[in-house]
Amino acid sequence: MRTLIASLICTLAFAGAQAAPLLALEGHEAVHAVVPIEVHQRLVLPATDSRTVALTLDACGGAYDAKLIDFLVDARIPATIFATRKWLDRNPQALALLRAHADLFDIEDHGANHVPAVIGIGRKVYGIPGQADLGALQREVRDGAAAIQTSTGVAPRWYRAATAMYDPAALQAIAAMGYKVAGFSVNADAGATLKRAAIIARLKTVKPGDIIIAHMNKPNGDTAEGLAVGLRLLLQQGFHFVTLGAMEVRALAS
Image (cartoon, rainbow, N blue to C red; front, side, top):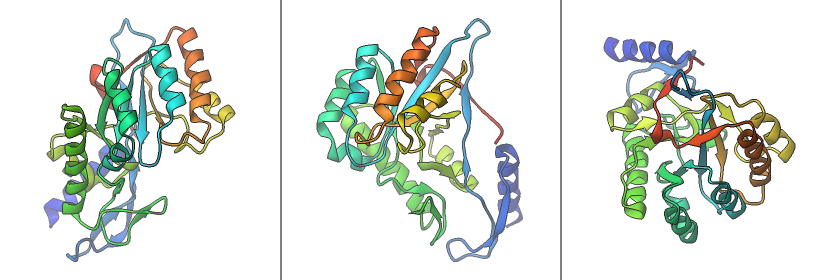
């Protein structure tokens, strides 16, 4: 028991999270639960590289933002796509287009059913229920990965949980399964809820090495239009884009 608590404390110190009240997990003896944290990361850039950034797009569920993907194809902007199994099942034509442009798009694991990586019955993030136990978390990751490999023929290397929030114990479990957790440093569209002007304003803050998160599953929102303007501005400033797999990343303190 002391070993488990010590491990959680070490992880919290690394991530900069704060301890939360006692919570019984999985019916076992109460341990210090933790406030879910976002993983913030940036690219590791060579000293001579001053204009590289990464665009990541979540495909949580729902539909397909064709305007956004068409823009990226036309502008030759690569992106790392985090897709759930349920999004893949609902959008076979979108998957075919992404695969037709495999030089631009890497497809990675966003889980099977878009369940947050927080562990414990009754726990939620942004109103979305988390995982009942560690086994459920592992199935979410594993089944999402299997769907990616079946759909693309390529095993995913990265995982991003629903809501991009994690318990430290979940982070440890995901790493133990062999996946890198994908963080970000610029939240461009706040879950596809922001309007065009706000998205553009956020993209104007992008600096070399930033990892941008946005969404490609809500075509009725302003994400496509906002990104089209904001990313063009970055291109005009001499920025170029890479997928996460092209470079190393480093964690940022919360």
